[in-house]
Length: 512
Ligand code: GBH
Image (cartoon, rainbow, N blue to C red):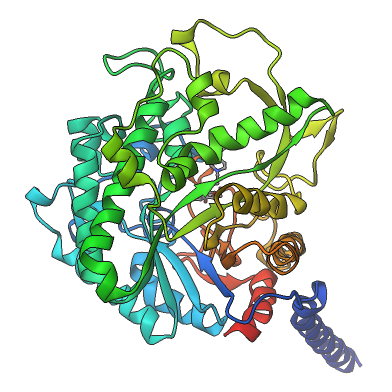
């Protein structure tokens, strides 16, 4: 009797398990439809960055970067976490590519770690052959699996030596030259297989967070030094990155592009902004925020100089000037423009008085005040990250704004994605059921589709951020942006496919 009962219970359990399995299999497909219209040749992909996934930070001759240094300073990163191991992608690269292939990901945006190729950042100290070998192996593996490769040259991991010796991006001579050499090496070694090059990822973040006393590597701009403070440093860092971009593009165009037949561009981040109140001042403040953020870099690469509003508002000679030759070098220096977009917020005209010119920060200069809330109501549902609120129409407006101002031939959405609330604190099985992310991607992609199919915006590619959970900068591993889950508690960092990956895999099928 007892035995019969256990048998019966067992059968019930088996049936329940089977039901659970079936429902989890169909849930991915039934969550949100994948039938969003895009042109036949639209490219869908997934993105990552070297420091966030590779780990192996001291292996095979890799030099240190400013993020190694920064993450090792106690108190800078959530729970003092670092990218020392990260997703151990350096050792798991083949299995990660196999996973990508199994998901039908046909385009991959990765970044190359500068200090793996040049441990000090400088060509004169020698190329690290093991770094070249590693990326050759990775790129070959991608190509062999039918995956197109887009490479970011600078996703924030400046060789520490360049920071220590020259002041990094505060120096517009040696660091720019060093980046030009590094780019040249990458084009020469990998350019036969890499068809899309992104010089810089979000130079805005490097400039304003890294050099404006905002607790971001290299952590400059606090107090005063001979080089200055948060009042001039962000502008200097931006200026150097723009020049470095322009020189790298010139090298590519002069020496490689004709043979290699690839494209080169830059990736800029921007939220879209909505007025806090229905006044002319607040509408103008929104436009100003777009120009101070996106336009700061896009105007130079399309038009050859900073936006007029920045020249007017950044008083006291703190905005560096381009020479006529530099303007010519910058103007038209992109084949495509990359956009990283996650969220939108409200902006109003600044009401509080401005500090004296030499104490003004970037935010002061912009003369705006922003918030994710209006009358206490958030613009949309909050993600895990405090800065990320879901507002899908923002991406369509942002893309239209770019098309209208710059009329680019090609826009790539190089990053878009979300960290679902609570994913790090729930059981894995629950985290894999990431309806929040599926809905986010569905709704944002619907708006990208509207921009392309209805508004005629030249968006040619979309990369979801991110291929897998990773080191989320100052938030460490507490925020998960991946469509693939990485179990940081398991000794071999096991990967699990989230529902969003299955959903995305369905969506991209017709374009493969
Ligand atoms: C992207 O930046 C990055 O390119 C990518 O590496 C990153 O993983 C992804 O975002 C997700 O965060 O902590 O309050 O100072 C998007 C722009 C820049 C927005 C840093 C959040 C930090 C705000 N992000 N910023 S705060």
